[in-house]
Image (cartoon, rainbow, N blue to C red; front, side):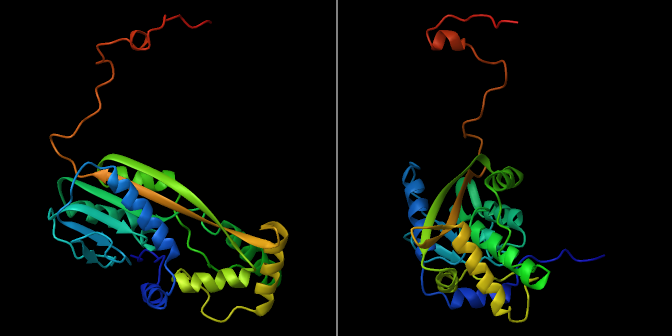
Length: 265
């Protein structure tokens, strides 16, 4: 029986993270999460933060986003999975393990990069490499779309699942400045199937030309970062539940104070 191929080389990922010196993506995700938590009418006393995060919640325990999370079942009232799901070999497993760490009616939040992230760089690198070498190698992680991660929330058994996103557009002098920034952010290529030898300079030169031609404004190139945010609750008997179809006791037309009219054929 063959093992499932890995998406991420975790040794490379940890090496990239250890060299990171800029946290602007993490700061955006942190601020968005804190804003969402402020809307939850609850004080959390035993939170955990999973992933490469600073301790941005008072009293939070930091947990490494390893394949098997070092968490105690039903021990926490809040679990935050922070900027790591887009590198996870088993994202649904990460969510399920996070959910198991929650007490009944405990809250789950996650932030990660989404599928529109760096779509410009992905397209230009693919075309440049294909033109120059006649082949393709994995260079940017295949990050999930919001509908896919929303479905993972449901598979994990969390109640009241919600998924939403924001998109940030940034500008750079050139593709080389963008790649330098990605190194500072710890978000360079850590794919297990990545090319293990240096890429030809001509590939990057052609990539820069394509980027300038297709994704530039006002003399600068544009790069997209999509952030996905997930939330849900550990099931509890006293949570609100949707009514069964046909159980309503009030007509919608009465609630809207309007006259109900039959549809025309």
